[in-house]
Amino acid sequence: MRQRSLIALTATLAAGALTLTACGSRDDKGDSDSGSGGTTVTIGIDAPLTGDLSALGLGIKNSVDLATKQANEKKYVDGVTFKIEALDDQAQPSSGQQNATKLVADKAVLGVVGPLNSSVAESMQKVFDDAKLVEVSPANTNPALTQGTDWNGGTKTRPYKSYFRTATTDAIQGPFAAQYVFNDSKKKKVFVIDDKKTYGAGLAATFTEEFKKLGGTVAGTQHIDPETKDFSAIATQVKSSGADVVYYGGEYPQAGPLSKQIKAAGAKIPVVGGDGIYSADFIKLAGATATGDLATSVGAPVEELPSAKEFVANYKAAGYKEAYEAYGGYSYDSAWAIIEAVKKVVDDNDGKLPDDARAKVTEAMQNVSFDGVTGKVSFDEYGDATNKQLTVYAVENGAWAPVKSGTYTG
Image (cartoon, rainbow, N blue to C red):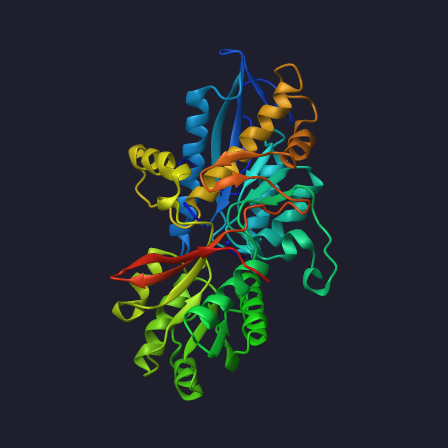
């Protein structure tokens, strides 16, 4: 998602990082537990565990927790026990940066899962990179995070070699949505709205560019204040514009009320958004008139993937109170990517973590490749997921239902 999607625990949850805990001295090679003779590696998590986006954040946390428990049950990395440490960023860049600094300060931390929001990731990347601490986001979709600020100008440059993601980017998600809206839904006149944040504005821009290229017309554009829930003025503008569809770049806490108020203003047209609105909470907030609204999300529907059946069953059996949500599968795979990297480093060092474990884990991540919950998990030269599949969902009978899966053909 974003500033973020297939499948979305204890202590305070934060920036998915590998923390090593035990008695004795602590360094970046983990902690020896003299009682068991093993090493404890904690996978940390950074996500919004409280606030408007907590549904997504808690799904991320639970899914990472599940991955660590299963790795331990399988004794997947000989001599290593995995734990999690979860930190709450409240979807705020400043909190994310503080969490990153906290994780880096603990030399036992070897890797990070998170964050949810691209704007939060921007504040964390350099902190982690300076410490050679690997970070794998299950949800960030802003292209600049991996390809540099001039990614759309013909010059792609990877800013940080320690940053990876299992979700695809808005360079694909926005155009994919535009193609569906124009070609499949036959909507030709769009009103574009965004929340001015990194994820929302970037997604709206890539959608708009493709929609116009296809021959569509932009009836109007507007920005909202994500701190408010009164969108009546914009809803009136949408009605007056004659648009037959609205595209919203942002997240579900604002998208739900926005959709409801647009319909109340008399514009009986669908609201379309990205993975940031793909949550059951969007439907709760939008109400009965949300029927027909659309959202794109990364990957294929988890429930329909043979590779995800075990995850879904195990998640249910674990008894988590919260749903895995949009990023559960990607969070599980992000954690497992770190586990795979740790295993590689341990195997290459005679069954022990080396003194420079952080740097070695980051290096190993580039070549990680395995069959995960969301499909094949591997990374390209920018640290982006090689899995580029996306799905369009529609609100039907009070729930999200998949209507089309595929990849963007630009």
